[in-house]
Image 1: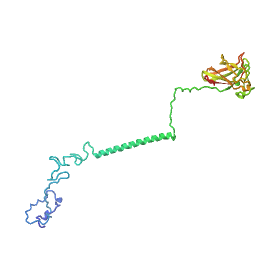
Image 2: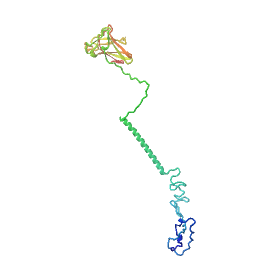
Image 3: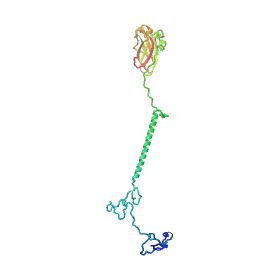
Image 4: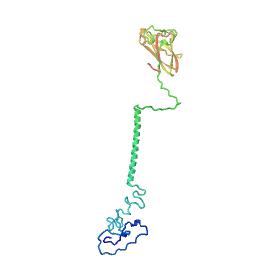
Length: 313
């Protein structure tokens, strides 16, 4: 068809193999005869339906990491595979029969880094939660300390059968009692002739100088103990004394009612007072002041009172 080609149009169909069934290929073309005329075109014309022979296989060039043909293996010792060769496994070379990347039982550095980062994040979150809970409980305690709590905690106590300890004993002291209110007998009687007495309305007990005259006080004390009886009186004459009886039993020592201020006027003699120690039992007790015969008992009784223990004032 064109100069420089011996083919025919029948064998120049490059797509003929697509619609021809097997066993119907055309016979291979005969070998070309040696030509004497130089070829004037690089495009060969082939007959329609004729298959071209396959070109000869060229040696495959090596890829990255493989030496080229004819290229010396620089920097490698004799018998040592080149860097990246099939016998050396690393991150760029998959293991035999396996996938590229992580080897069996080992993590790559990137996965290890991700794992360490995740653990650090979890630890930081846990520390933050613990800190927040700690601060929350501290704020609640502070609010309760400031009195801002809305409700007080409810507590319950179980009933107990243990006896309650008694209170610490305190010193007993009776109030001052007017002598005019005591039980009078033997001629003793109330009087307010001489003013200045401390008793209510200035009323005192007179006529105690008669033999057998008496004034009895009934007093109640909290326990068996020693007590001090105080007596205030008026005396503007000679020193006097009365016999004291405790619960009906007279004492051998008399109660001295002396004129300590050497008074001569009865309305100015109310500053005298005396005392005597007595042993009393728990509960009610009677204390009686009586004038015995052949004794000077010329005094006016103003008030009486009692203190626990042996005291002087």
